[in-house]
Length: 146
Image (tube, rainbow, N blue to C red; front, top):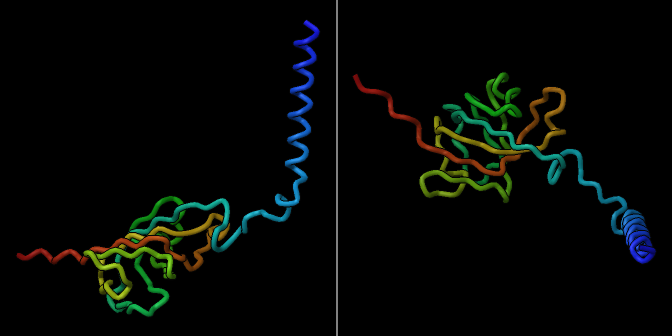
């Protein structure tokens, strides 16, 4: 019986000491993730669906484009209410349109689906410029013939 109590006390003290050492470890200090921008925490996914404006034809070297927002998830509802969004593109953005994977492949009136962003950037109903992680595009639907 005494042996069981002794082992229990020993295990409890080792757990308390290891937790205290881990908390004060120098590698853990000052490592909080940024609240806004790249690699922010908590990250949320903003999903926007819509079309490229008729006057927008992005080229390969462009860093952004404007889209007309038709649908969104709950994190993107301010962009839907605004009606449009400026979408930034960087080297890490994945772009897909009929087998092409560059920004120049997008054409005016294309249907686009964009995923992006960070929760803190959206605070207060703001509509910051989004840096897209993924862009999926399809050609505009053909007008019905009558």
